Length: 226
Image (cartoon, rainbow, N blue to C red; front, side, top):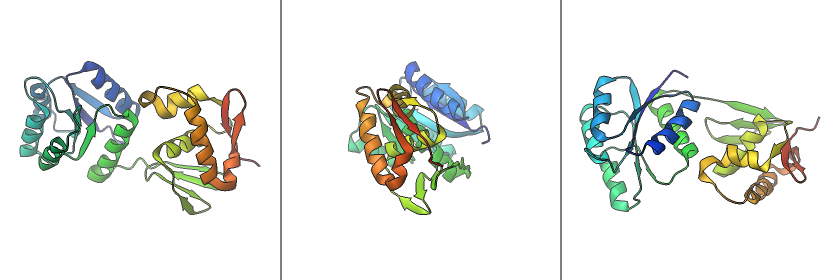
């Protein structure tokens, strides 16, 4: 993928770092701004910014004002972040031309997925990744799974879990490692949630569910039988 530039605007440095870390990991170049005025300075300076992730509540110049000014000069996509989830805020965002509207707290992995979907649409970038394992085909870009050519319906987390298993075929994975890599920052709690998701995933995979082996007292291993 080309080094696409994304501007992240939030007055909370921890939030900017969290979002930046996830985006940089996926190969994006991230510019940061701590308030609306700084954001507009960067926007006018750098014509290569392809997308803006914008917090609503900020000092000096709030997200609505920033979005309004950006829209006077550009149609680049804008993802709005807010701690409030009232319908009128969301409607105002869409009236201003916001492409996505995400309420805090949110999953950084879902935010990245939204970013990639928007950029595929606006830039034609396609991080197409196809994974294969024993008749299972995973299209990570399209978020689709087929078994012997037949599509199966998986939830977001089931899809992420299956992708992680296939990418780590033959490796024993502890529940803690699976939690850290699949649930990440958006989940804190009992690792038994993995067992529930694995049970559902096995059921949806039919006889291919046997590829997911239980390692008693530890976790799971995905292994295609020869």
